[in-house]
Each structure stands twice: as structure tokens, then as C-alpha cells.
Length: 173
Image 1 (cartoon, rainbow, N blue to C red):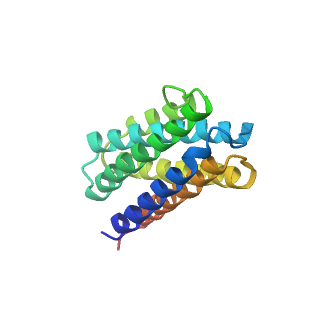
Image 2 (cartoon, rainbow, N blue to C red):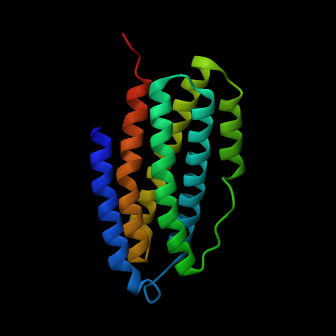
């Protein structure tokens, strides 16, 4: 699958970027924008994993299920990198998605069948657009090179997820 090859390359790049940045992490400059990014990314990753699990449990649509599985795998992997960085910088991570994220998913989960699928895909589009926004904010205003590298790496699968979701949202003829 095209996405798997691209994301495998991104994963390798991410691992190398974070490995190179790791020794300097304790001495690098770290600012409030970096901490905010780590918390938002962590909450976003938790929300995406939870949302993916809900779609696997509720959807019979193969396209939705494929995207859900991809989100679970990729966001779990991204979250491990984020939590490692947060630990190195002493940033406390929240235990769950924020209330708005939980409410959004609950509204989707209340639907069934094709209504669930459409609402789930729309939620994924919204969430991934928001993720790209806070990734861009970290890239523009973050201080710590390792955190900015993490944001740069995360942008690759997030853009691909958004592309896949938008493709799935297109009307079929």
C-alpha cells in the first residue's frame, strides 16, 4: 500500500531525527510553546486511537475500518515519541483526551451505519486539520529542536491521514 511505504520512510526518518536529538535534549532550549505542543499532540493521539477503536467496533465499512486501523497504529507510534520527549523535559501528560474531544466522539458513537461512518470521517477531517494547525504553530514558535523535529515528522502521517479521510468522504458514483 502506498501509505505504508511512505509512512515506513517517515518512521525511519523520525527515529533517526529523534535519536540524533536525544543526547542534547536535556541541555536544549525549551519553551512554553514546546510544552503546549507536547500536551496537545498527546491528547490528539489519545483521541485518534480511541476514535479508531470506536470505528473498528462500530463500522462495517471496509474503507472506514482501514483508516481506523491506520490511525490506531500511527498515532500510538507518534504518541510514544511525544511521551518520551515530554518525560525528558518534565512535562506532565494528561491521562485522556480533553472534554471536547470526548464529547465529539460520543456524538459520533451515538450514530449507526452510514451515519456513523459519515460523522466519523467528518470528525477525522476536523481533528487532522486542527492537528496540522498546532504542528505548524510548533514549527513556527517552538524552541527545542527535538520537539520541532517531532512536529515535523508527525506532519507526514497527519497529512496522509487527512488525504485518506478526504478521499473516503468523496461521493461515489
